[in-house]
Image (cartoon, rainbow, N blue to C red; front, side, top):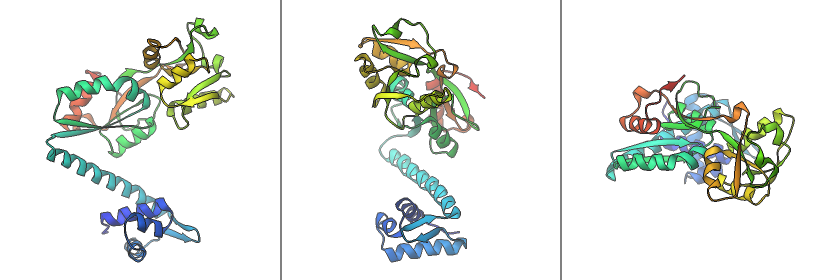
Length: 299
């Protein structure tokens, strides 16, 4: 089987665009040349990769399989170029780290700054994603370390406790709920909320728990980031749920009160996930040690 990188890039562009014409344009290739390459791939595999329709094309089962592996191959190639380029720039290593929103905003800035100061020749490629996507990326070898919620399926990975990440209710000072020492989600599910923007993993998590109670969350406003949630709550626009670290930080400069949730699912931990600790590159092992300070793996 002989597919070059141009074949793979072209096929992904066609699948993503939905037409061979648009895929060829994205690949900076003529339509005739693109069509010939697709036919060549189908001939090699002895199976159709695309279904041609009036409105465009769609991938067959074989085509979807090829697209999946093409994405992995191209991602690895990009990573290789980035890492080799780093050597040319005088760097001696790179660590690929994916994390969820809570880790990115509340826990990693200080930890990473300490690691980078101690290892001046190592660079960190940091990106924020949803926890389940991060676990999948670690399993696929698309990143070195992932920091995820402990609610995520991390089967096949080694897990280490990174930080506690309990969820708390935030209300404005003087709010009726501000006098509570603890509260259950069921007691507040019918209130009007300040929430994170659509697509937020935390907000989807809360919506699922509301659904289990037969309820649907009502939002007065949805914003980006925990600080924005807290500022809206301070103005009595609604109530919010954020990680405890965010509540404590924002309460220092805002008229807010944090009330712990009693629900078991709100007592979260952030987990650092890797494929196999002993097989990690040295720089990745060093970062993991810096993140965890010797915490034992959790199976």
